[in-house]
Amino acid sequence: MNKECVLGLDIGTSSCKTILLDKSGEIKGSYTVEHPISLPRAGWTEQNPQDWWIAVKKSIRGLLEKTGNGKYIRAVGLSGQMHGLVALNKAGEVLRPCILWNDQRSAPQCEQIYQLVGGEENLLRLSNNSMLPGYTAGKILWVRENEPHIYEKIKKVLVPKDYIRYRLTGEFATEVSDASGTGLFNVKERVWSDKLLEILKIPRELLPNCYESPEVSGNLLDKVAEELGLPFALPVAGGGGDAVIQAVGAGITSEETALVVIGTSGVVSLSLPCYFDNPEGKLQFFCNVMPGKWLAFGCSLNAGGVLRWFRDSLGELEVALSKNLSESSYDILTLEAKKSSPGSNGLIFLPYLSGERCPHTDPDARGVIVGLGLNSRKCDIVRSVYEGVVYNLKSVLECVGQIGIHPEKIRASGGGAKSSFWRQIQADVFNKEVTTVRYSEEGAALAAAIVAGVGVGLWSCVEEATSLFPIESRTEPIPDNVKVYEKMFNTYKKLYGQLKPVFSELSSFSL
Image (cartoon, rainbow, N blue to C red; front, side):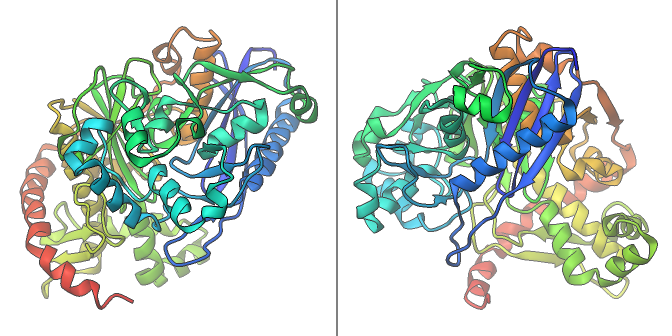
């Protein structure tokens, strides 16, 4: 290795991923280390921040063993799961396990916040976002109410990636994208909301200094550099929260192309050149990792995880065949779905297996298959699952369109982007070209490296860096399929409103 490189770290919910990206845009290596998660009660999810730190060190060492020494590394970029609460005392010690982004315990505190600020409209004026139980603000109030002996010792509150920054540099810092996801940030002005902090009686000194994402926020401590075999005083950039920064990893730098991520959940996001108000608070509206830009996105709780549910619950045959044929069970399900035609022989699948966040904030929403008849076949049902996920994501895109910007193209990412079948359904349902780019599956770790490289001048801007990653696939909509999907989608949009009262009634029977 003889080219300047940047190190990108992503502290995910299940693992830490580290990549090494050189100046020409080539990934020289990657290394992933898993870490545990704790579920102390129903609806609670926690992790020990020390487990992240152990995983980070293992992943860096493992990467350097694969790629050679780290003397050409110019900077470190950070990303990670958003919204988590890491509480530290005055000695910088962790006071309790981190309360994660998908923890639901603070729902009552979120309702309190609405009451304290005088309703959702007032909250949107302060932060441009609704208050979700996943956000950090509700977690702070929960600790204050339920663990006062812990709260009185808190001297600093960090989100996960910023705890790793602290261990790397000794600095308490965050950046604008992750700060946006705390629920305590003035997204328009890109500063902490002093007014909201005052209303909630949260001392400003509990929060770290906030940087723009490419800015250098600190330098590697000598003891850490020596332990890990990295250059002394290595710059550490601001970085970005994973849900925001992953757009950069997929090359989304303007409003012309929307990013559609089909992972366990689904995300539709759009980079914006200026600030917009968030209509009805349906979207998450955060500061972009590119200074002077913002990102609007909607998150559906139901995407690739729905197909996994179908495989695990109803796909015993496909799982058995996959073992005998040494093929992916998902590939076998795809072959089954291809036996059906666009529109799934008149079936529509509502994918709300986990409730829903966007386009409908409804924890009681449930999955439904509409249109079953004696002529319905298994292949129709399987295909309807694929199509239902994309119908839902199109509904999310329509929410994004409410701000008045309508992208021309779709960039696919996540596990769903690997399937040419699913990409074709996206192209047909969205009636837009769907593209994928090189390395987009590397996600937030790649983007963290890009942003850090910009911060130390390896590239002049994010756009210069992302131009190094060529388009790998293009999928054009098929006109005949588009006509079918337009009719099916119009019917799909009517179903939630008609079934919402039924969902509420059925919720009391859920196990």
